[in-house]
Picture 1 (cartoon, rainbow, N blue to C red):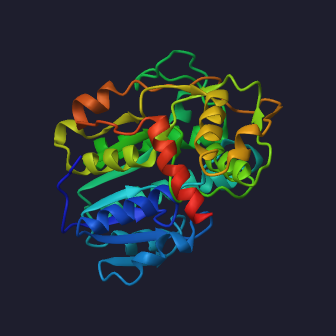
Picture 2: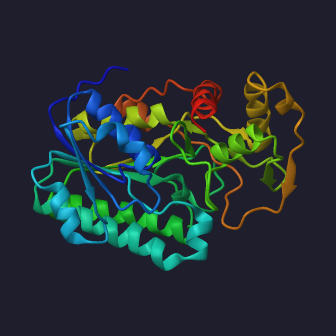
Length: 326
């Protein structure tokens, strides 16, 4: 999908991270000025090295918990794509205070800075974790349950704050509830690595991945290019689209057992030994919801969202990237 967006000044918080760096690349390719604000707590310098020589790219090594850094980043900006956060349910359970400081206080700082500098629109990464203990499938935006982790609480608070800033200060906001995003540049290392890059890395090393539970939990895995499309559409959408939230996913669900099967199949094209690796199973992970699938009709209807990558199509692209870059 070709989305017209050029010659704007756009702030990407968390711009050295997985999603943020992919957004920076796309925006630069469309001839925009990009300001990347990142403290590199989870972002990687290597993700943005190709942009450092680009005159349209500005790196601010700063922290969204510092209002001065937020004000510096948003000065004369047209738009903000707020991706900075401390992700991971287990991390938030282990350290809820830091998750709150980054995800709530940092979010509020960016809202205030965007308001003060009269940013035209503030698009932010919301989360499917907001659906909490709601068992209804597929997930519809206006039907949520109670949060199951500190991380989920912080992401729901983001939505509440965005709504208040829209009503009180007239700041245009759009929240994108991401569902299990994966793809190029996603870090496979560390205690809180996402499941797909972690499994890919283990299989490439001929190690047995461990699935939490019996493998029948299901997710709406969403390839990075679908997410990029949603962010760009949110920036150019008319005013009928603002001051609300949208599910951003493919609109399907696959079990973890399905996922492992696809990974082994695609990776065995590179190394036939991988198809014989035995998967191990462990206990369910605290704070995990059993099943997740998005209803994406709202985003389709109002934003014009048309996800082009299914799980299988996205995995083929992602695995090719990992094989050549890990």
